[in-house]
Image (cartoon, rainbow, N blue to C red; front, side):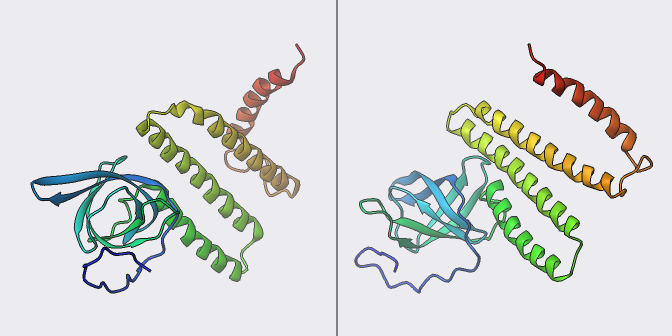
Length: 226
């Protein structure tokens, strides 16, 4: 149930129009008060194109409008407080806000990826029902997974810069993911060679061969005994 201050008029139960996704986004909330404005840094914990759930120390009363600014992108939107949600014992309740104009971009890249991933899961189910070749389905999954992880790294880099943390600590994770993806692709191509689906005449094979030669010569050095 929503928690509301004493004396506030009853509010209709919030009708959530879109699925919320667990995404952490730092925003600045600003709302008018007598003699000026209040600015409060908030952390969005679950968001959709229609609104979100914010962790913030103070907030305007239910029904009030406020301006939200994404601290990464600088994008600002108008929103309305529609209720609060109980939080952990002793912590301030989370504030539910509704964007006055729905936005697929305000919450940033991580939200867009979460939303897209959810849609892709539905597409995957349709692909399965359509008796698609398992290799195509596997490539589809691998490609989506790679894009998701790369985009996560971009968002994480931005957030670490915003919080004055060293973003370069992400580089080993990015390199590890690139190696994993390269190994995955190499095994898939090996399987295609075994079934003769890839031959010398396959487009791009010359460039691929020279790239492998250069890669092998450098990787082999790492495994030679000193």
